[in-house]
Structures are given as structure tokens and as C-alpha cells.
Length: 142
Image (tube, rainbow, N blue to C red; front, side, top):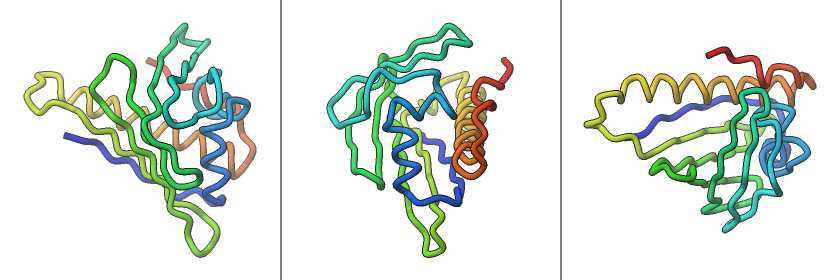
């Protein structure tokens, strides 16, 4: 079972791709830091200083400016991020997270939490790229 989240961000696909792949930029909208540039075959360590969290992810597939596929360490879920540049210069970003188990008694809770997380990340990305806002990233309360 999967969960799909889509946004339109009024910036070229290259800028969206670099916001994820460049360790100097990811801290402006998502995690505090990324261990290195996102490239196929690498294991990337992401840190979220505000929540004292660290997570690894295995980069399964990278197609610059078009597609990022990764797997969270220790999880079955695979995330596919696709970037579709529009004629007006904006980009449709789609995040598909696949691997949720239909027989999981906590499925609904996990799907809602997942959707909330991706909507928050993409909202922060939109604010960062369209308006230069970098202070939203650590604002979600749990």
C-alpha cells in the first residue's frame, strides 16, 4: 500500500532537485543536515538536531532534476520523489511512499502521520524556494 502527496512549486525542477541533493540546502527546509550529496548507491545520514533524531537512507536511484528513489534504513518503505517541470516554469513534485502493510493494525495512523509529514516537508520546501523562508523546518509539534 502506498501514500501519494503532490505539490506545485513555482520554481524549475533543477532548484527542487538541488534543495534535496545539496547538503548545504536541505537544512533550509527539512532535516538539519545531510552527511553528503545525494547520489545513487550512497547511504546518506540525515540529522534533525531539534528532535535529537538521526536516520539513514539508501539512495536507490537518482536521475538529476527528475527522480529520487530511496529506502529508509531498517524500514521496508521506499520513497519515490518525481519532479515534472511545467511549461510555466513551475514544477509538480510528487512524493510516493510505498511499503505500508494493509494488515497492520496501526495502518491508518501510519498513513495519516506519513501524509502529515510529507505535506509539512513540501510546504517548507515551497516557502523556502518561492519566498526564501528558512524558519519553518523545525516547526512541527508532536
